Image (tube, rainbow, N blue to C red; front, side, top):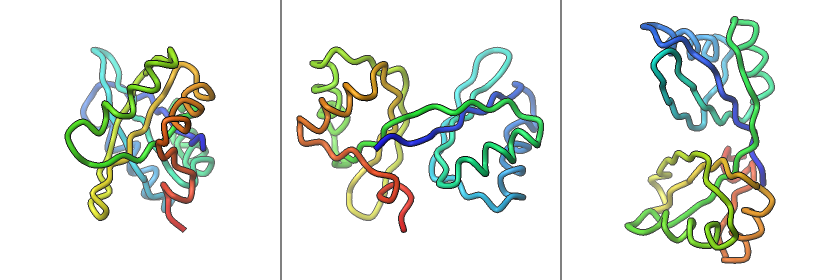
Length: 143
């Protein structure tokens, strides 16, 4: 139900992103999804990875500052308004979206939304109560 996400703090300079991804590639770690946000001085690379503990260790050994955070993955129809259908029950429950990113599965006309909510348990209850598909680890990462 809750997924572990890694946040990697990167210097905002050429080569920082590539260096972090090379660490994961060298450790034979595949990334399920990612997002990159930036500020003036640094960036935050958010990663969802099946073997997140191995990835965290590899990145830390590579000299990166890494933080682990719980997030939710919600599957929705990949169509106009899909995101709004997810946000309605969460808003009604008084839960704030801290950030999100998404990817399309491409095969079932579905998209997966990765959320960091202010209250994950309350968000899970609201989403399940509204009939939303909150994904388990195996559904995100496959067998």
